[in-house]
Image (cartoon, rainbow, N blue to C red; front, side, top):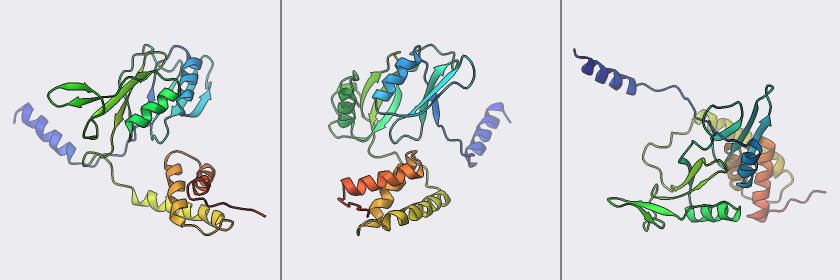
Length: 230
């Protein structure tokens, strides 16, 4: 048996096994000025998770984009990469025009939207067919690390992992318990509206109390359900 055959067979065998879950959660972004970078990412509306100094001479700052399961970190003594050396970090959005407008309203210099045309490459403007993965725009942080907005409304087959039934059951149980407290003081409403808002907030990284408050605001603002307490 040749080494090529062995390699091919080993790869085939390995690909047939179920991999242990290894969730990618944080990217280190190299910056020169921590406070300047912190102000920039706060200006984007990203959630500040941490800002602390674990040991003398070090500092760690973490931000999470809205709705993202992954975060970024930067600070002092966290990386040997050159500031600005990360390029093309992807931010997935459902509406690239709205996302670009929001960034511009926050003072960010964003490129014009462009799309990939098969056989032609980058072409100015939003993809005429509004196909997923085609339309993009980019911007940079103060150090030159670049981010790319990519519009995705429909994922490729198999791209999204199946939901863990056990985890979903636990979240539903938690949601039901917290909804009970809201239901006790709220007028008649559709429970699924509250459930959806609460679960979306929890899956977005909010604590249970924050998620309950977010669900209450959603019903008040969108569904016009107003709670009046004696």
